[in-house]
Length: 295
Image (cartoon, rainbow, N blue to C red; front, side, top):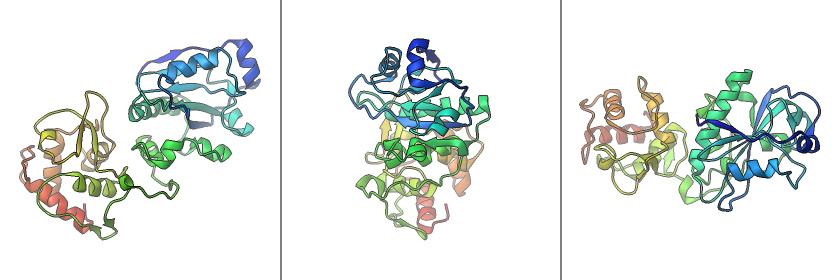
């Protein structure tokens, strides 16, 4: 987890935007800042709170792709949930959505923070909730819609929970895949491209966009077809994490390499050499399983 930097709001400011009691810390409420302006990162929101927010609002932490900033003690009863009960019993976390930041990485950092707080205060994953649950507001907007590539289900899954949330019905090209309860309709050609990735994402219950993000260049990732792989020197992929968990016995780091391919080959019963050819026998078997709905 990235280090938590403290920029604690002064008592004179805190007295104006918090209740006087002690937070029982039964819940964690997840928000998004809704400020997409460049530079509207965790530091900016931390300074906003420290200097006296123009709104009658307050929250404990703000998280972006680089850092976590704490503005209030966890014991403070901040005004963030739009509901006094939750304000008195919850820790509020704002995820930054600034256009010059990496939203997926900000979500990863928020996951790490939530895990830390869950462990510290013995908070169950069922008590990690959306702002929407507390007040009815469409927040956290992007996690609710999945339009930035990460869903609320992905978030809860990373915390160790089950995927039960159903996002608002909104069909887009990036969230649809030809896949039914009986399987996908892939061409069994051994070429791992966007269609195979979409079918795998659907089978594993992650965001369906045909993209495996934040990968490092190596012999495995260079063997993919089309625009499936997005390279980056930081971050990782939710679908690769889900795959690694399913295969078992792997470091769940969200990064594709020979170890993950070797485990996939063993799982599918093909030659085990840790290599991904162009085309590949293991990908053909993967496609057959996805088509049959038996992966």
